Length: 122
Image (cartoon, rainbow, N blue to C red; front, top):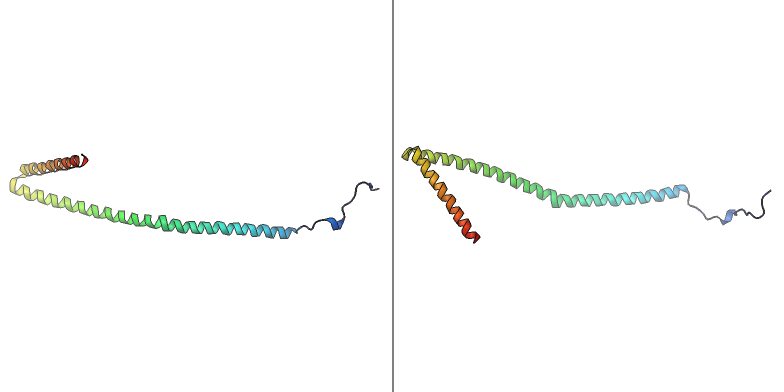
């Protein structure tokens, strides 16, 4: 026998609840929206990083590579010219005197550069 004090809720007093499929649809829509925002931010960030970091870095790398290649060729050329001038000088004055002359020029050059640097620092 049912207890008279306990009342049963009436069927018409219940609030209408959305069905499970509607809740799933809203959740899917929110998930898709958030994923769309994340994809957009990744794409825009990737474009900005590519334009502002990757491209200038690639250009700087190319400039440095070509500068190093040019410096290598320049130093090799200077080396061969120096050897040729040394041989020409040695043929006129002999090897010991040629070495003495070139050593003196290098020491004088180092002294001149040191003097110029000292003057610019004062």
